[in-house]
Image 1 (cartoon, rainbow, N blue to C red):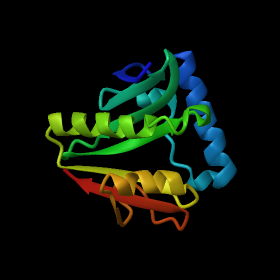
Image 2: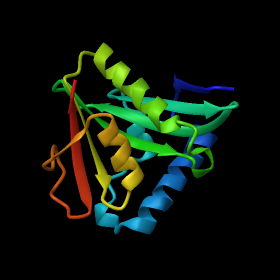
Image 3: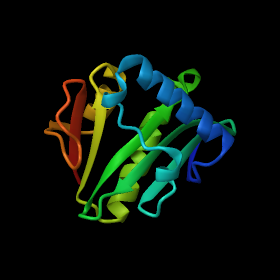
Image 4: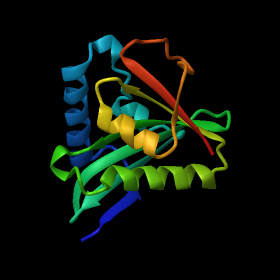
Length: 151
């Protein structure tokens, strides 16, 4: 069965499991001050679009697009269950959120990721994201990489 991606609420067991896995993974790599995760309630605000990826009906990935209100948005909470990696789930999530951003006529997508996540950095580079200085409320952090793609 192919990967399906749909807009859904983050407040469901399978997604909360993914978010907990994502939090634990980030905590294993970075100190708390270098983790910039949105919590569950922040993912439920009107400015956030949240997608869930399913493989054979099971929740295996998620991502959020946070509209900044200035024609840009930030990608947050991109995560794929380690057991589902290699199935192109992250690529499908990226394609979906970029298509949505274009429909919304956004002009740029930005993100923050960590320096110890080469797979994530490689994915974003493959999609045309380039390194930029810290943006928005972020402060420069030697453990963070900030990236942007103009649409």
